[in-house]
Structures are given as structure tokens and as C-alpha cells.
Image 1 (spheres, rainbow, N blue to C red):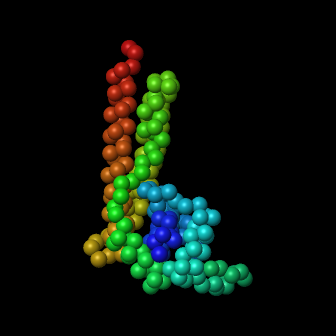
Image 2 (cartoon, rainbow, N blue to C red):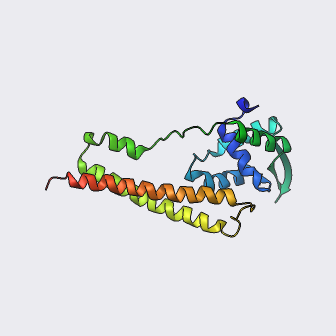
Image 3 (cartoon, one colour):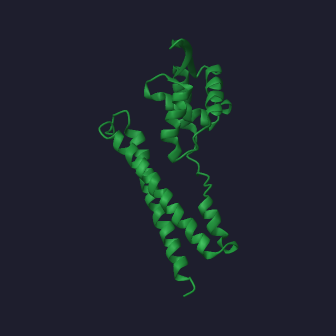
Length: 187
């Protein structure tokens, strides 16, 4: 069955494992709040495409219910979905992440631009890192109290901690590159 489900489908199954039924819009909101720090948050159209696929495969249950005079569909993971997700988690090699890092790409070919532009790009990246770190720190803080072993948000808190460490390392690397560029600046 795994060949019928892309990684984004498994990400959506994972978002549905926290015990609540969600509309497609709510799945998108949850993806935007969580996945954006380490995975591409899928577009709304991709969310609905995957929810239809997962429903067709019996991995998700779709329930229509009235809401303020209109019909709303909520989605919940099924037992088969839980098993498929577990199988994917247990049988898929860790793999090495594909890094699509535009800052590193631009730094690699920095000689094609003015040194000041490269410095500005790195300073802008440091500003973006600071904003992302603030956002992720807020997410991490919201998980406190439900992050102990056996608690429902233990694993999301581990991901948040990893992300905070990653952002800190990215900041160190960017500052080191910036310092190196400053060392070579005409004086």
C-alpha cells in the first residue's frame, strides 16, 4: 500500500493521530503550524487531494456534518490508517534529507555578485532565523506539560527541540560565513 501513498500523505495521517477529527482546512492549519519548520507545508489543494486518496484507500474516514447551515466534512484516521502509518514508520529507512538551501546555493556562487550583496543576504537570513526561532520557541513552550514520556506531545516536543538546535547551528554557520567575508573585505 505504501506505493500508493506519498510522504505528504503519511504526514497528513500523522497530523490526524492526535485524537481529533479535522476538516481539510484544519489539517492545513495544523500543517502550517507544525510542518513548516522541517517539511514543506502542503498547499490546500494538495491537502484535499491527499485526503481523498487516503479516504479512498480506507486509511481515513470522512464524515459529513451540518455546520451553520452548510455541510462540513471532517476526517479521522482509521485503524487501517494507523497500521499503514506504523508500517511506514517501522519499514522505511531513515534516509538522508534532501537539503534545498537557497542561502547556501547563493553563497556557493557568491563570486557572481558583489560581496556586499552576499553579506546583506546573510544578514537577512540571520533576521529570518531569529523570527523562525521565536515562532518555534513559542510552539515549544505551548507543548510544556504534555511533553514528558508517555504524554501525547512528547514526540512533537522532541522535534521542536531539534528544530531550535538546528536554527541555532544555522545562525552560527551564517555568522561564521559573514565573519569570513568581513575578513576578506577590502580595507
